[in-house]
Image (cartoon, rainbow, N blue to C red):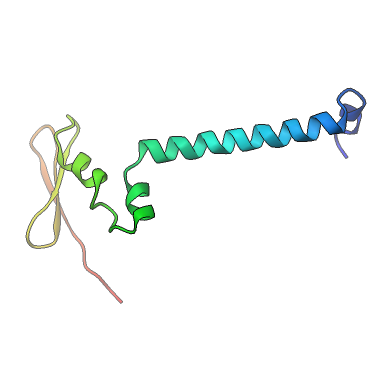
Length: 94
């Protein structure tokens, strides 16, 4: 064991629970950050199609970066702040 001498300073009955609780708190903090800063996680957990909820509304609004939307022919249309328009066509393959 690499850190065998550590247990001469910290008792295992204190160190092991302290380490495990620090890992649990860190993991919980990461999960809270992901759930609060993304919209697709809520769609996924509720069983909705990804991009149908808050995330698509956030993408279609003017954020000063780009506008994203769909047209009738299944194309993704991206409009950049300088007015440049790009379209992406996607097809489904089975």
